Amino acid sequence: MLVIIQRPINIIIFFGFFFSSCQKEDSVAPTIFVSSPLINESFQIPTSINVSGYTQDNINIDRVEIDLVTDNSTTIIQKIDFDVDSVFFEFDIQFSIIDRLLASGTYYINIKSFDDKQNMSSKYIPLYLYEVPKVLMAQFFITSSNNITKLYELDSSVNAHLSYQLSGNYKSSIGNSRHQYLFIGTDVSGSSISPPLFNNLWDLSSSISFYNFFSSSSKSNNGDQVHFSFSDGRIFTCNKDGNVINAIYSDNQENFGKYYVDNDLVLVESTTSFSQNQLVVYFRQSGVEKQRGNINGNLVEIIPLDNQEYILASNFSNKALLSIYFENTNTIYDEFEIQNSEIYDAYKVNNNILIASSSGILNYNINTKMLSTINSQLLCEKIIEDEITQNIYFICGKELWNYNSGNNLIQVRSFSDSLKNYIFFYNK
Image 1 (cartoon, rainbow, N blue to C red):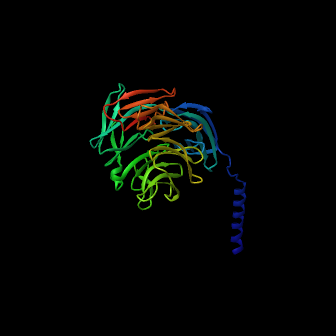
Image 2 (cartoon, one colour; image 1 turned 180 degrees about the vertical axis):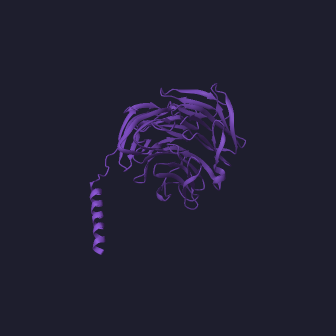
Image 3 (cartoon, rainbow, N blue to C red; image 1 turned 90 degrees about the vertical axis):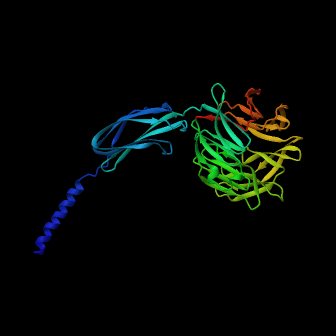
């Protein structure tokens, strides 16, 4: 009985193996044909891109995926999935691209087709997107008196309209066009507001303790981060929502003055009541001190050059100093002295350093190491640049002066109160 029962089982196993071995595993991937968009077709944002074509398989298509990606496969438009369950599938969809911050460049329509056995084929259709052009949306100016700081907007007829006001004396302000807000900091409050409704997005003075030590602000080149310095030896970095993402603290009894945030480093003037001023370099992410060195006078501006070199503009013993700091060797060399003068602001334009000083508006050529006078009569406190025209503007008391590419200095506006800042606000 045992032998009779075993033989049919062996026969069944044998024939089952024989027939299964004769069946071929599906290894053929689906094919994809794309009729739109054309290879290397170009589009101006905002735009809609029609993606059409078809895919087919020898047995059955399980699903199709379509998205828009960068050259490193970062997703720009969220993936669209289709559950198919047929041998043939035709697609015809629209991708709407409205991102004002998307940069010009080559992007890819990525189409993938999977069959039931997960054999996959893909098509990458390159196309070129032209970014939204940068345009000027508004111009603002800030005044401060009697413990009140006011923000005004200029209309198309150059009439000023009060848009917002804060209590306290003015300290610092930023126009962040990328994320569409203005930050204004006084000695008692610091607010981020969003034009055109001027609603309050976040309040720095309520989220950071000992706000009364607030001294200045700046933003990263791309505008994704903002930096806030406090004279008691603190620098905070916040994201666009005002959340603190990084912090640097000084040693005990050290105060912070002028600072500059570079890619990986933070350079800051450190002062105490018992020693010479120093330039301290911190690692940006960890906040750990890297090195320090003595500096002469009080820093007004730290200007980056190339190869981790920086120009230090300072005032010392009734003279203005331009020095070069070599971060790699932690050495400082005096570059140029301006006797009987005081620097109020300094700004780099190409190979020149424009200087607002008690001696007027000056220009220092970095290559020739020559100093020239643009105007000896104008006493200006701040230098700003229009990012579109690249024209330079000087805030001189109640007046705004334009220094254009033709090296002409022209008064463009006058105001009833002294200006603290003038902000060009763009669409991005």
